[in-house]
Image (cartoon, rainbow, N blue to C red; front, side):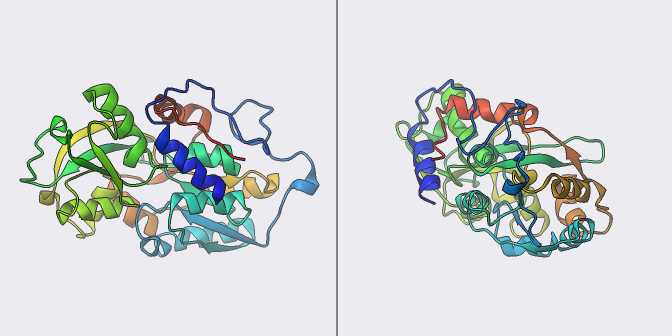
Length: 316
């Protein structure tokens, strides 16, 4: 956990310092094929084949919300792999990354901004992402406030406090920090103050209840909360909408046996969404299937945002 805490601190401190360094894995991993993710160990003695697979979904909201949502999929994974599969309710991005790094997490969905850290420091091998029936995917970062807040445009944030979610979140911190500087000439900590809510639902509820003046969130989470009746659309004014980013990346820890990793791949791509909890929850965003992705190609824009923010990863 010390390494992840230091990593989060570095993320915060390095925002204004361009790094322009190529993405690198931590020293415990090898990447001989150049795909930017950790290779499966060639020595069978270094591979693991656990009887129970632990799965965790990124903590964008209260994990209790998603235990039932994922239950049918995890039953399908158990049937496909022949393993017992358990849902692990992580409370933070850092805890999720540390669990995989420590060998306590085998299959996971990491949020957009956490993917590079998980790949570099925890041996995460992402291979899938949710998408619509037509193969379209992604979400946008929004800067939101509440009606009559006195903040009518992004320029009005100057001198105010902008609420982020966590330092590892793309839409909750990394992308808006880079965009505020690049598009609006405002530097975090100089032109506006920042604070962290911990999760997207905290930020969304905080703005809806007027506890936070202005916040940066993933609009996919906001949409699902509106669909569930947790908040209503008229509680928000959207000041800014970003380009489309890749959404949560799903994958395995690097040292599962190749045969088990292949079965897990099959579980994702053979799952029938019809009538499932995944369809009910994520269909609110138009998502209807898992599609194949690569970290090297699909997370290129996110690595560029990290580079623009001066983010580097100390995985030691």
